[in-house]
Each structure stands twice: as structure tokens, then as C-alpha cells.
Figure 1 (spheres, each protein chain N blue to C red):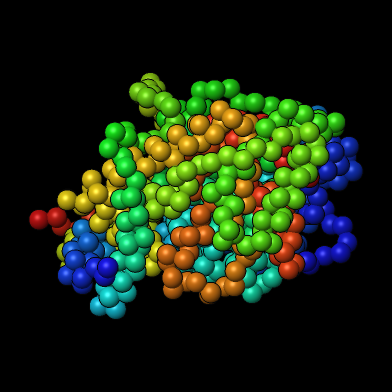
Figure 2 (cartoon, rainbow over the protein chains, first blue to last red):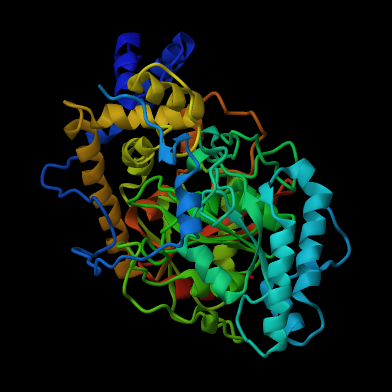
Length: 95
Length: 478
């Protein structure tokens, strides 16, 4: 199964990834082949099978909500790697 | 290989520990020997993405002072390399991606912090498939790593830089991460030990997330004993990773006994891992390992893991889905690659289009597709249900046996470039390693000999949190 360019374009939009026309074609074929392979899962009867989302055997893990202070240098190192203006991180207009 | 004389960098952790404690060698000399080896051959291998000589030697001097002061710690003064998907404070951490080309980690991953406290010496960061997506290290945005056994071949992946580094003695051990085989398969290709601990045994705080439901950090080492020492140091509950188990950490180094008796131990050979398609040369090597275990007193039992064939299809739904979510955070805001564009949507799309390599894009899109409206039940839910069956297969099997023995990989290391254009062929590389990942079980690849001068690994899988039994048996096989 080959995924149509228009469908791949839609997935790329949802993924927020810019693709060239060549990439659209290539990924359409490759993802199609992968999905064909994955389709063998349909042979398994899973009618009464629960899902496994995680395997830690733990649930409701809590810890106290303590503020851990970072020193100013560390905060600067963490937050000043992006595009800055007047000490603030620059973000594009949303509206 | 590259050497025929004994250098300090060729020591195991155990050997180096004795020499350091007896004052025969210094941590500085040991560190310098590793740095020299990196300088000598890494321009060819390309196992390292970053080497920090100044910091490493400084840490070595501190370690020497601690040793002199009588400090006894398993890894004090032991130099190591760390896969570049694990955060190292003040050091560049790229995940081998262009999108994080200039990213400086603001804090240490819990494992790195623990190793720092133990006095291990961080030499640098190793190459990997971008964001750990791959089985050959060819998906690195900074170029592939070569296999030290044959430089025309891949070292495996995604922890290929770490495996090549240990095999070529650039360090005494390395850290890797294993999501669906990424420690074990490169260990097999490079002829070393690679341990994937149980899910939740080792904290992932500071590991850049790939597949949150299977990601684990573990050691790549020259011996089973060394793997035990590293695991003992890095394992344990961490309130920064809610999936870590509260179970106490075992003294894994205490499992190694001199008598090598495995009387009463039951080892399962799952028929689905030994199908007639399996290369007879690989089968021969794994059966030789089985024979050795039998000689040591273990009993071999034929078992079945009936849903084995669905491991890859389940893994390649679960993983891309979790990746599409985990990698959504890389958008060009705040840090990393940031191109100037006219509006926000275009900004995201440009940064991600330029910043991610082909495999990351494929997986993000596959996951986005599988999770999109109308497809969730057919793909993600179905895969999670079959995951339950795979997990139950193992639970059933461990009612009969204590340990499972399989090949790690269907073949030895393949040629660089041989299958880069065939993502499905690359996914099939994981055929023997995804099961333990999906079930959250500990598994180790150990050297099982050479085929045409290339290493091949055998895999041992144990019940959850039974790393000790794996290490014990691997120790007997050494």
C-alpha cells in the first residue's frame, strides 16, 4: 500500500514537519511498506485482551512538591540558549 | 584489532580497580591512556561526538586524591564514555541531531550524577542514531561510527558509538540506552557485554525520551563483572523518574562465585528464536553457549513464546507513537535550532523539517498517523493488546525456566550503507531484542564467538528485576 501524497502531506502538517516533494513521495512509499508489515497484527485475536500501556507495575507514584532552587548561573545556562531579546525568549506571534 | 601490547586503557574495571587501590597506577595515567587511544584511532572510528580532555583530567586528579585519602568505591577513578542522548551538565548534548546541535545540558542525568559521585571519570559523549532511532548508528546527523573489527561495517545501534568505544578500548566502560535492543545489538556486533536492565531499575531522568514505556539506561562493558559494578552504581529509585521501582538494589557483584556451578538452573530455548531461517553459523554459536551451560550443570528446556513474530510490528507502532509525542517538544523555541520565518506554523515546520533527519521524520509521521483520528483502535490499541500477549508469553515461560537463551542478532555486523534505504529491513534487525523491551525484562548480550572474524552475541533474558541471575550465568560463560 502506498500512502497518497495528499495523505502524507496531511500527516506532515499534523507532525509540523516541512517536507520537499521528493520526501513526500519517498515517505509515502516507505510508510506504506511499514504499515503493510504491521498489518499482520490483524491476525491476532485480541477480543478479550486488555492493553499494556506500561510495565512498571507501579501506579499513582507521588512525591512532595518541593521547590528546588537552582543557582542563577544554572538558570541562565538553561534558559539563555534560545533566541533572546531584552533577557526574554523570543517567540513568534501566535495570532 | 589495533593493539598487541597491554595498555592501561585495555584493562577491565576489576583489573584497574585493583591497580588503583594498590597504588600501582593513578587515575590520571588511566585517563590519559584512554584519551591517547581516542586521539590515536577515533578520527577513523568516529565513536565520540565530544571529548573533554581538560575536565576529564581534572576529575582524574580529584579521584587520585580520594583514593589516597582511603576512599573505596567501585568506580572511583574509572574513565567512561556516555551516549550523547544522556544529559551532562555544561556539556553539549546533541542526541546526534542537528536540531540540538548547540544544546548545552543544564543538569546531569541521575545516572551521570551517581557516576560523578562515585568518582567515575567522564571522558566524553558517544555517537548514536539520531535520538536513538536505528540499529546501525548510520542515522547520526554527524556521520556513522565504524565497527572496530572491520571499519567497512556498522557497529550496530543505536548505542553504536558506546559499543565501538568499549571494543576499541577508548574507555573502560560506556553508558548506552536500550529501547528495543539499542544496547544489546551493538554489543553483539562489537563483541562486548551489553546489559539492558529491567524497565524501572535505572532512572531515566536526564535521558532524552524516545519511547517512554520501554527506554532504559544500561552499561556496555568488557566483562559481566564490570557490568555488575556499573549497574550497582547507577540503579535505584529516583523521585525524578516516577517509573523507577522501590525494590532495593542488589549487590550484583556478589553473584560471581568461583565454583561456577549452575546445578538446578533451568534455561529455556524458545523455538521461535531458532527457526529454520536462522543462519546455521549463528545457531551453532548459540548452541555452543547452551552446551557450556549444560556442562556447568544447567538443564536446557525447549519452550515456546508464541507471539514472538509480533514483537517487531508491535514495537514499530508503540515506538513511533511515543516518539511523535516525545519529539513534539523540539520546536525551535528556547533552545536548539531556530530558523527565522514569517509565522509560527512555518517556524515550527521549518525547524523540524531541517532539524530532524529522515528516520526521526519517518517515525514522527508514522506515530502521528497511527494516533490520528480513526486509526487509533486499528494501530495503537491493537499493538498495546498484542503487547499484553507478548508479556504473558514471558510470564508463562518463566513458570518453567529461570532464564531464556537466544541469539541477540540474526547475523554479524553488516556493511555501512547496505540497508540505509530500506527502513523495514533495518527494523527487522531488532527481531530478537524487542520482546524483552516490550515486556520490561532484563536482558544481556554476551560475546558468543566469531563468525568469519566478526563477533556474534548470545542473549540472556530473565524475569523482571532478576539481573543478578543473568550476571551470574554470564560470569560462568566468560
